[in-house]
Amino acid sequence: MIVAEQKPLDEIKGLIDEANNVLVVGCGTCVTVCFAGGEKEAGILATSLRMKTKLDGEQKDVTHVTVQRQCEWEYIDPLHDQIGEVDAVISLGCGIGVQALAERYPDAYIVPGLNTTFLGLPTEQGVWEERCAACGECILGLTGGICPIARCAKQLLNGPCGGSQEGVCELNPETPCAWQLIYEKLAAQERLHLLMEIQPPKDWSTSRDGGPRKITREDLRLAAEEAE
Image (tube, rainbow, N blue to C red; front, top):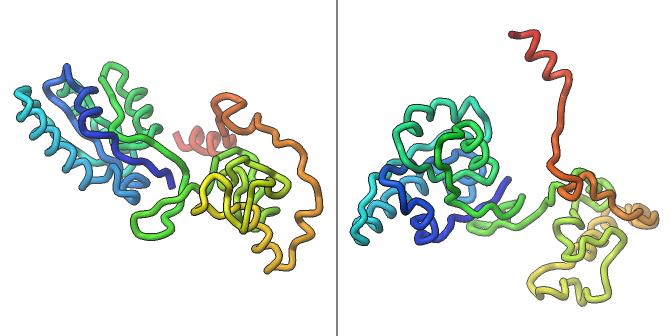
């Protein structure tokens, strides 16, 4: 899931200083799960902004709505009338949601209410940890399902660095060494032979280093065209 956290209230307020009518748009998927931008958070932010701007002597009309997903046209198209009636829209979606709204409604002033952080996993109540860097070249089949790109501070592909001590990362004693976890997992599965083959330097062209990425499924495109 995409993990995000809400921006400070003063920062959000600063983004809408010139607006009088504001719409807060929540998202019902990833950011709802991480308690950053769902229906509840959208309502709280709208209320907080109304109170904050009133106390500051510049009261604004702030309403809110939540859609199932901000990253697909079919879910944000129904917002057309509401967005047309406001001066600014605060997106409580991830960075994709913000850009989707901005692209669909080019004349609208769309601002982010969240800081998008990483692709993560809720490991316990109130705790999310990064698990995937979306590098475009998955090697989890060779590393026991543990990602060295996202979970190793140095993104090493052939074992731990010299700084790993007693199974923890040198950067933070509370962070387990990814390669220690990989070794233990493969040892338990009797698959240590997977580590014997040296991995070549990573092809970062499949990651962000290769520019914006795009995936096209021609079979799905053809099916859509035939259905029209």
